[in-house]
Amino acid sequence: KTHGHTTITGAMKNAFGGLITQRRHHSHKVIHEVLVDLLTIQKEIHRGIFAVTDGTICGDGAGPRTMTWHEKNYLLASNDQVAVDALSAKMMGFEPMSIPFIKIAHDKGLGCGDIKQLDIKGEDVSRVNYGFRTGKSLVVYWDQVLRKKLPLFEPLLFHTPLFNACILGSAVYHDYFWYPFIGKPRVDKFMKSDWGKVFKRY
Image (cartoon, rainbow, N blue to C red; front, side, top):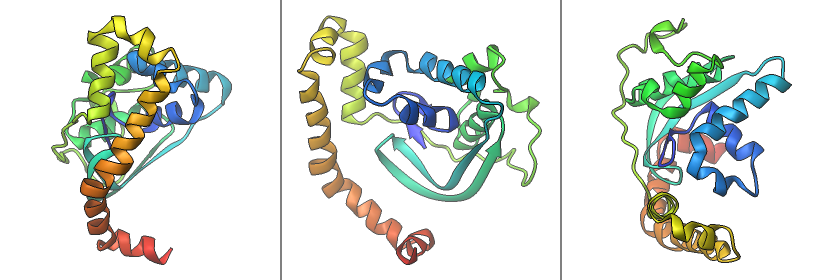
């Protein structure tokens, strides 16, 4: 899926939500570098890392939470997290090496972000291009404005108890405005799709 902070969410971004819990919001300002650091740590700890990217249903637009779904029916798998993210990005319509965390990881030798160097097995996806575009929800937009363009406000809003008000504002926007009026109709449409029917039976 697309993501307002990182262009895409994939194998490398998945570690962000799983390994950084309470303080992950404070990492958004340097999120690309953090993703590379997390992959570096994982590779130091584990002998092998294997990633499976489920592209049966993909998200386009203002990710990570306010996207439009599309049925694409692809599964990608690799022991190279950089490579699987690069291929995901390319299929979504992005130039992988233009995404900072992919390029930094590639340059550091943590994996291969150059599509031309990948040995891709299975279906030929060289012409696949979903034409996705990364958007920014109101929450992601204001997060970036306050952290990058109004840095004087960052310590007050993100490093004091006022940060709880930001979290509450995000919850109110997503749960009481966006989901009932925009998200739920999208979910209702999904539930009528083939995968939605599978979900109902599960």
